[in-house]
Image (cartoon, rainbow, N blue to C red; front, side):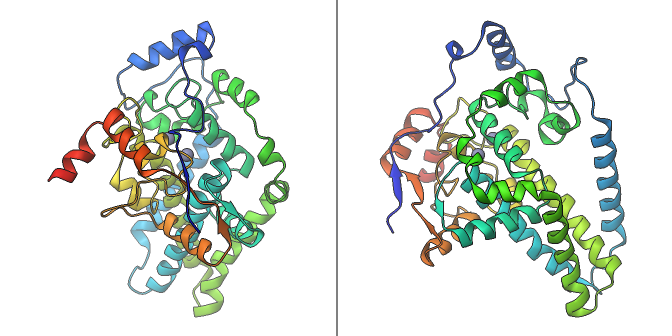
Length: 338
Ligand SMILES: [Zn+2]
Ligand SMILES: [Zn+2]
């Protein structure tokens, strides 16, 4: 099936100062001129100590696991953990991100169910919350209305934003966001209604397979999955931190999102972030060519071949070329000439 090639840079209307209130304009102007920081804190924020405690526990156990796991004796269980990492990451990148948040392609019921299972295995927040956070992030990228505004420093956009009560600028945008398509989605409604039970089942499956298939102990199987979970959580966070702070901007030099190879490999294809913020509806999240790695896009094309995915969207080649010439930082052209 021929890809659905669009001629617009971004489906979401670009935010201009006239779109936002006077008070927000001041905030917007302030953040635009703020220098990048590693740490940023506002006294009016309320810290969610239960989240701070949870993350401290997660990192402490993971570090203990990384130091004590018998890698050579129990490598099969680690390979299994990497397989779970791969399919749960596909649930995040291909499912909740490209399919549900951006509608980059259409999917038949078997694929929607598979994507839902993979996303639940990643053990993140309920579907609706993830989509809402991400859509507001795209609409108000790197302003105070962005839930993980990267102008507030590395710690904030990586994980700190989860440790405070949501700022009112963000809450206001959440209320105004159109989520009718998601509210009408039966798979999302079902999964969110039974989210806790479903994620316990997915977690149990990931731990039980090594125990019943190659007599792994419950302890080491649980430890491997625990480490897999915390590592995958953090690689997901790198899209909001590393890919908003470090890298090239071949498609739009005026925004913070950047092309970051470390994030690309860690998330199986999600780090082409300057491209993604310029063309968020592209199912590839990157302009494929040369050595560009995007396992998620490869899997979406596989599902297209077996008829489970269709109507894959992407911009026309001429639009991408024009955008590179008019808005890019020149790095892509330089690399092509070398
Ligand atoms: Zn982003
Ligand atoms: Zn996105």
